Image (cartoon, rainbow, N blue to C red; front, side, top):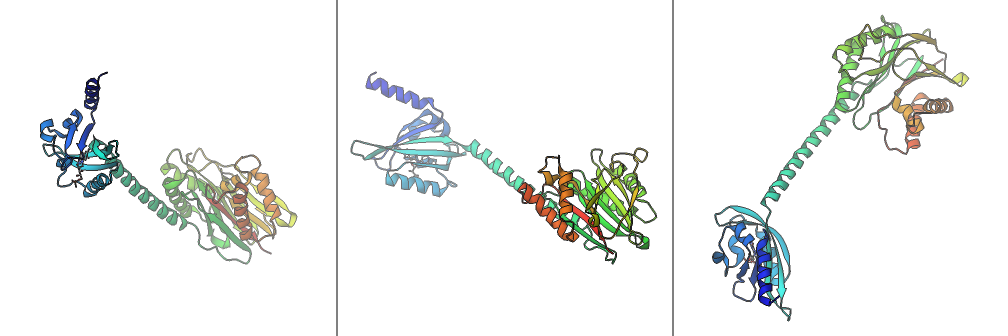
Length: 389
Ligand SMILES: Cc1cc2nc3c(=O)[nH]c(=O)nc-3n(C[C@H](O)[C@H](O)[C@H](O)COP(=O)(O)O)c2cc1C
């Protein structure tokens, strides 16, 4: 290939690219353009005659970012390469974003004789990036709003729980509740009923987040409006179910365990609605007595479809009655769902001598330690009372 053929080939190659390719002379006054590719002319709308011999700054205008021009100036003064994004204007005044890379060309004495520049129109890219940045900002704002809403729902949800328990010489109440981060659906209540009876409820609504919080409010309100000492435990659950069934979404339900305790006779009546068994820890005999009855879940079935059984047990001094939700036992066998009940019972027997509140706290810590967790993946809820002499 002759030198002329080579030159023509290079020129053709430069013109074939849609990017702008330019060469400025560094040895002539004001560093004029001595070569511009077809891509550059298409991008800027000028003809070759209009630009050859001029410094390329003619593309700059009112809103061109000065900092980018400064960087170009410094790079050229130091004989260095440089890449900037700057606002340029085409011949008809339309602004466009130009990603410009300039690179020095040196002669045999290492003197910079020319600079080659590559121009790319990145207006569409910047528009998309800006759109993405705006969308991302909107998402961030939305995320903060959701987190704020969740915080408020979590705070409101905790108002549903009793802040203090009734005081009695015949029994001592205790509870331990640590809500999960995302918002769970556990709640419990201790209601003084007529004749010094007490109603104790523990419940777990399916799901997490705002829907669970809303169902918790609905269910807790339904329960408070129904529970009286004139109704048995089973009747109370039936009535709560009736109230909730019509309003509850079809795929949602809750489990409940409700009991009424008479401290005078030490008679405990109870009814279970799909909830984990309650445990009576008979400390005097080192014995576990699980309390269970037949009963439907609350919510999905109509009054005709549900039935709740009721049973009773006579307690003795020293008995500890423990109501809990499944997060408590799930953690005890590393969520393998095999041996959790045994481990739970063994734990209770081993710590039977502790006051209830310490027992609950130890149980919480034990589950975390077993699973090397900092927090539980669900609400951790335990409620109970100890029968005094
Ligand atoms: C090869 C080369 C190509 C250039 N292309 C552009 C360009 O497309 N757009 C632009 O605004 N400036 C471009 N410049 C930068 C200007 O020509 C000039 O160097 C810059 O405005 C800073 O110098 P000044 O202070 O003399 O204006 C280019 C510079 C060189 C060396």
